Length: 359
Image (cartoon, rainbow, N blue to C red; front, top):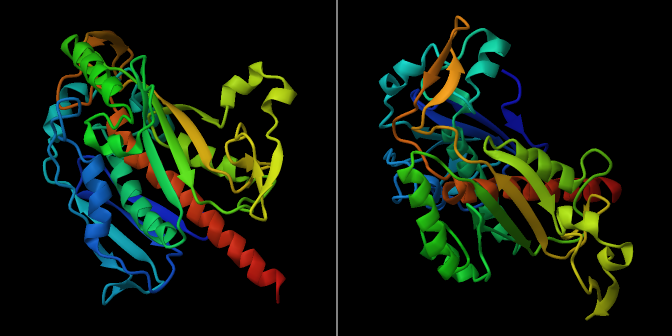
């Protein structure tokens, strides 16, 4: 099936299903001689895994990653890196009641129309579980970017209408919703618990700060770095919107308000503001990148919903089982992963072009 790969020089191809043997990713373009251990990847997988708290799905997967190829004596070899994550606690029988009925908000109907067959065991490739493979790939990208002093940090900016008023990055991993505001985190948790009791779900906003990106990354006109970020982030199933810098607020600003004026600082060109979010003309400006995504409420809810079955008969459905009342906390490492993949791919492209032009 096309569409399972992403990237140009740093290219990832994910595989596997939610309730199959497992999931994984094959990564091409990993630079050689990078020190890499399973523990480096496991750290981010532990941030994404289910069963972390009362505001996530109770499905308990250890998500232990195995490196199958591309490593020799603790270093990358430059060949394909293959990572595999076995599924340990899949329960496909829980989805038997929905085998012949389309769940509202899910990809059941569209997959059936496209392929004439669908994996009804927890959505198969359309399941959010596929993102574990992305997080594994992103952990590798982050390891390489760290050597370039590039840091990618995502956090829950808003959940269920409760918005963070402070941005304390040290606070993000201290609370179960990954909010940079400790006070707002308590309100967010209460909001999730409230909708959970009503057998409903809630969405929110995730913001990503990228620091240390050099100026010059991105390839106009179709491979602009913001276009690639949009492609990467909108490919995450729960994401329904994206903005960079001032984003949609820029539609209500004057040019004199939006334009970032320049000044010199220690021999470097800087901007007094960063309304553009670190990207101009599809190329990184050297300022911090600021990216925001809208995350919809999870589709699996216990409340009765109207649907139709495979024979076109109208019926109702109640989706019980182990599901997230809010996907925002667990999507944070997924967002970091996809942003990291894009940044590293653009960095490698920039260096390749420079080497070619200097021949």
